[in-house]
Amino acid sequence: MSDPAAPVSLQVEGLRSGYHGVTVLKGLDFAVGDEIFAVLGANGAGKSTLLATLARLIPLMAGAIRFQGEDVSRLPPYETAGRGVGYVPQEKGTFPDLTVLENLRIGGMIGRRSRDDRMAEVFELFPDLRALQAQPAGTLSGGESRMVACGRALMQDPKVLLLDEPTAGLSPLYVDMFFEKIREIHETRGVAIVLAEQNATKTLQVADRVMVLSLGEAFAVMDAAELTTQQLKEGYRI
Ligand SMILES: Nc1ncnc2c1ncn2[C@@H]1O[C@H](COP(=O)(O)OP(=O)(O)OP(=O)(O)O)[C@@H](O)[C@H]1O
Ligand SMILES: [Mg+2]
Image (cartoon, rainbow, N blue to C red; front, side, top):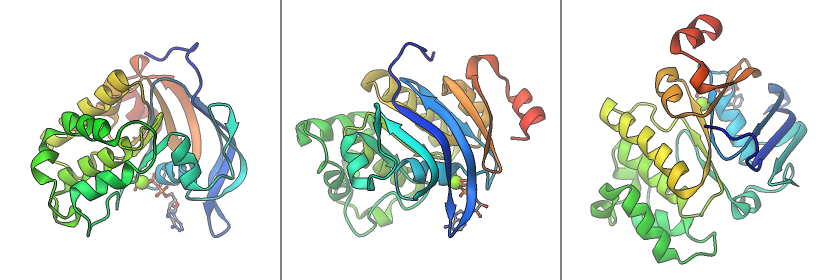
């Protein structure tokens, strides 16, 4: 459960962003603590735009992003990554020509802890990756590729992990496995999670709080435990 007393990790105030002068996110306000914070919304709601903005890949048009009290609104992505913001994009989360091991090593270029220790932790979390170490990431299946992208972000020792629809297009078995891993990452490593999702049922099973995003506007931030899939479908058409 979310703990209101827990230190705020990310704080977003009046956030506006978009592309080529077109506003997609129309002024968002929310804070993420030590929790799994889900952003639920339909296609085109602005979830990926939000996560890419938080990862500092898209410039802000207005507002501010604070990470652990520091204004990071104008920092470049490698600076926020270095401070502990990990990002797994919806697509292209790996370097396709590099092997699995090389992809993980690139993630490990950030962070202070021993790279071997972190690599061992990633293999513990995703044991399937062990046998795939020498394989080019571009030849992996969708599910394997998601694990590498997630592993690469974890190699950076993030304090908050931005996950953009990590289970989209995966088979039910992989979907279940991935949602379990998300909980595990949060609970055993103390990493706060911002999870963009369309799958309301699964999201309610793992998230502490849910923000509903529709056409770039945030409708509500609610405790997941107080919500049902039916309410989300009826109220917000998710
Ligand atoms: N690179 C871009 N240039 C211009 N417009 C874009 C770009 N990327 C996204 N958009 C627009 O921004 C809006 C929000 O898109 P976004 O990808 O953030 O939605 P989403 O909630 O992630 O959707 P999905 O669930 O389909 O991934 C859409 O109207 C989309 O067309
Ligand atoms: Mg998206």
